[in-house]
Image 1 (cartoon, rainbow, N blue to C red):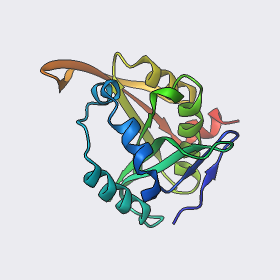
Image 2: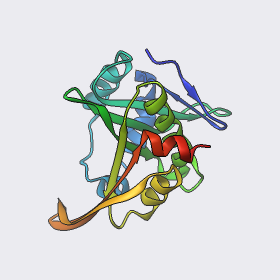
Image 3: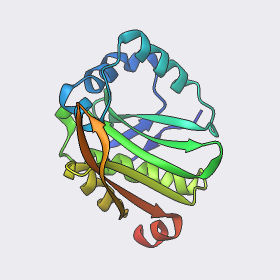
Length: 182
């Protein structure tokens, strides 16, 4: 199991079943589900997901979730994670999700920056990507603040609630990150 990653205000750690109520609280917020293009999750599915995530080995492939909690007040406020495919182990796709009570406070940037560092320094990735709906300016700001650059814009590429949406994609190479973090 990966040891917790500590930042100035946060702790990123492997999730546990104790995170269930906090996970469901942010995961099933209607506005979040719409902007992140997902459906609600039931309690049994959430338990199963958290159980699998809590047991991942350090070098596991697929989606790896890190629970986000504040250092001074423990309790799940969201997640940050990375998807690394077994057939493309030098690239990862970064994502984050915070409960609405904790947005616009810099937590997403802090957590995403810490996971970016872990991904390059500990996991040895060459490249990280992230994407969102083109209307999600908060996520785009997060991507820019951690050093990512705009790489793509797709037109009507995501069908959501019966309507087509544009998406943007950002990327960061390890060599770019090494310059950016100095």
